[in-house]
Structure formats: structure tokens, C-alpha cells
Image (cartoon, rainbow, N blue to C red; front, top):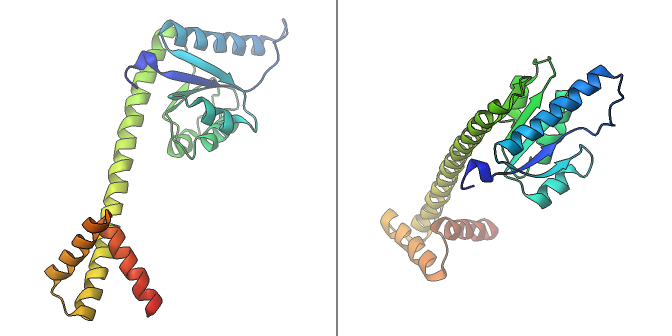
Length: 210
């Protein structure tokens, strides 16, 4: 993602019929959706698809590989979000929701579930770019924190494996701690593996042999 304007955006919106001329609420929602699309295009974003909420949503998102998902929830935002969050569970992406749903009691749960920005009403075109700017920056920050946490957990797990493998070598081959680690490290280098992988294999063999 080299620039915000180059973002490939998928809009997810409930399917709806063309509103009747006397259906004021539907006409308002249709105009709001139209304003959202115009605002995205006016700010240079690339709308690659507009997808309905159905059983094929996860597959379509996986095929298109968008940089960001913009949800046009209109009303019933909670039901819409559940589908979108489930569709991005395996491959996280920034999700920005625009809605006229006045019930904000579930905003906290939505953010916790993976929604990056939750915007209630107010779709002036000049507001869209700042919202997406902040949403993307927040998503990237959160992903960096997730990677750091995952790395820390991996390092801790690796350290535990290596310590256990060293203990096995020290007790069974009468090696010092430094000698045991050197043995693990040399084996890893000879076989093109990580030290933790060698340690895990040694532990597996020891467990199998008793």
C-alpha cells in the first residue's frame, strides 16, 4: 500500500431494491449510499467491487484481495458487521463502517471484533479521506503490535524448547550447558534449521524413546 489514494476498496452493502418514489426512508438511504461512493471516487480511491452480504462474501473478498473494506450498513449495522468480520477472520483487513444506525450500544464490541472505524451519519465527501487515513494508520499500528506480540510469544516458546533440549543433552551425554547449546547450534547449521526446530526434534525423539 504505497499511497492512500491507491487503496483498492471493496464496498460491502446489504442488497436492496430500487426505492419506490414514495418511500422516503429508502430514498434517504439510497442517496446516502450514493454520496459515499461519490466521496470515495472524488478522493481518488479505487472501488474495485460492491459486494452484497451473502454466503459468498468470504470467497469474493479472498479472490479480490482488497486493501480496505468499506461497509455501507445503512441500518441494522450490527447484523452487517457480523458477516463482514467473519469474512475477514482468516486474513485481517482494515474495515470502515458508515451507517445511519443510531443504536451505538454495540460499537465497542464491533471495534474489539476487528472494525477499524465506526462512523455514524455524516457523509460529507470532505470527511471521508480523513476517516480512511486514520483507519488505515490505526490498522497498521495494531498489526505491528500483533506481530511484535506474536514474535515475543515465539521467542518465549523457542527458549523453552531449547532449554529443555539442553537439559536432555546435559543429563544424557554429560555435557555442560554451553556444550549442549553448541551441539544444538551446530546441528541446526548443518541441517539448515533453526535451533528451536532441532530442539523440538530432539525432544520428540526423547519422548518417543522414553
